[in-house]
Image (cartoon, rainbow, N blue to C red; front, side, top):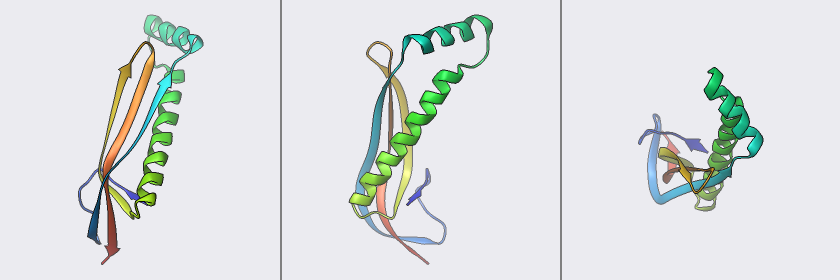
Amino acid sequence: MLITTTHILSDYKITEYLGIVSGEVVMGTNALKDIKAALSDVFGGRSASYESSLSKSIDNVLEEMKERAKAMGADAVLGVQHSISTVGNGLLMVVIMGTAVKVEHM
């Protein structure tokens, strides 16, 4: 499955547009991560625990989007964009979406 933020693929011809496809996850934080992040705020530096959780969430969302695109019969997802925002109290939402397409190698 080809995934790209661009709207074209070099050496490929788009044969069919299948529609918008997305993946999403809502990730909760826990008290230990909050304490570590607070210490990073006080002493400076990056919050490795939050970064690790966010990285895993992005991987999960990408995989979910790929599976949905495959179910639509897609070979690629173009124009992929992401959004990361807070929802509720201590929840982080990650959404990735793009256009599922069928392609042929030229």
